[in-house]
Image (tube, rainbow, N blue to C red; front, side, top):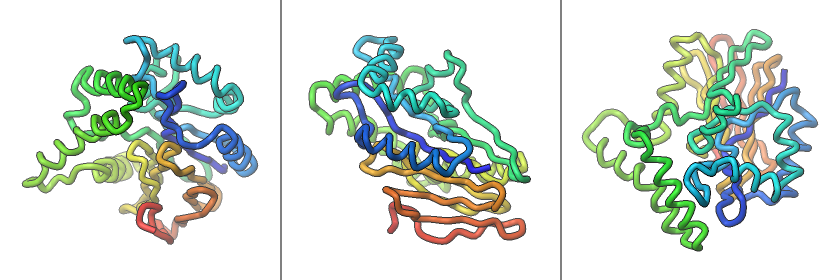
Length: 259
């Protein structure tokens, strides 16, 4: 099986849209992916559903995206989805929180990654309320203010951990993936969420972060289960590759943000 994974498009109508790839670029990406993949997974945060004009209006965002990007949505509907922290309402339509794949002896688990967030970001209603307010800042053209709101929890996280051995940020996902690989006997754990495209070998397995399509880049990952081979792509360039050798994974190339 050849499994392609994209995540973190953050599609929304009008000024609230955070996807940085134009429609034509998205359609070209889908053409490229479908030419090589047997299955395609959208790994969460396909939409920004916490930023409607009116509270609780998340369905209107999906309809707005459908009106603005009809060809894009038509293509996306042919893929597998999981929900993320910004489109968790999709669970009400039957979209699962995670997906498991077992092919050619590889056991693969995909989840968005917000499950490993700091406790502050998991407080009930805190993140949805902050995102709702940030959405209005976006509509008013105050993008910098909206972005700053999103960065506040990360600053607090760093302050709380200045005297702790527990590191903040993306390391949470890496630790979570390592624990799943160890306890569940998985070979690959996939997430998005942090927008950091990377392949990281851990004891007996591989952590894959699929990057994003909302930070000025077009990131995606292709997993060849029959060859135990994984490739990470950014803007059409292969930036990292991984192969399984015995019980371990070998990675070549640097993560996209370190090149």
